[in-house]
Amino acid sequence: MKTLAIDTSFEACSAAIVDDGRDLSVETKIIGRGHSEGLPTMVAAALASAGLRVRDLDRIGVVIGPGAFAGVRVGLAFARGLCLGTGVKAVGVSSLKALAASVAPSGLLACVFDARRSQVYAALYDQTLRELIEPFVASPEDAAHRLTAQGASALTLAGSGAALVAPHLGAPAFISEISTIDPAALARLAAAATPHAAPPSPLYLRPPDAAPSKSSLFAEAMAP
Image (tube, rainbow, N blue to C red; front, top):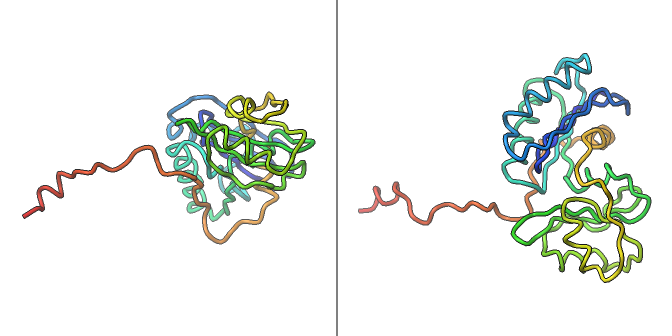
């Protein structure tokens, strides 16, 4: 199964193509911003490197969040556009599970991303990638409490928020060197999943930072 995976949920812009577990093309760039400009070029390069055309793909895997609001939207919109143009099914994967697959844990793994505003996104997985605690957003201290509530004595932390949570665990924890999503691992997750009938939807976990203005020029113009 030829699977394209894309991730624009945080600072990285990533794309990979995997065919039945064999990596055909894998690329990750830390760009911070500009995912909407960089992603199409990266996917085109991945297809060319793999010797494929878009219509040759069997599936698309895309990170649905949690993550940066703009980045998540870019990835989902791009994936949906490819699906509309080719009829290929898309599979959405959370950024936290994609990170867990990138680490390939041997025990309990807490995936933690820095969510800014003194918060983190987190989830807990076992060595089979079974989700023990579903994705949530909380302060680093509250996240540490939730992640250890099951009495885990040995916990590995991974992700950009790992160092924020570690001091609150009350016990030493190993911090993985892997802090970003491997798009090839994402592709393998997507290839093994069963696509839903509906297209993937974003997983935000909290309202956007930007809020609509309380005043409106149009409202003022319409006022009697």
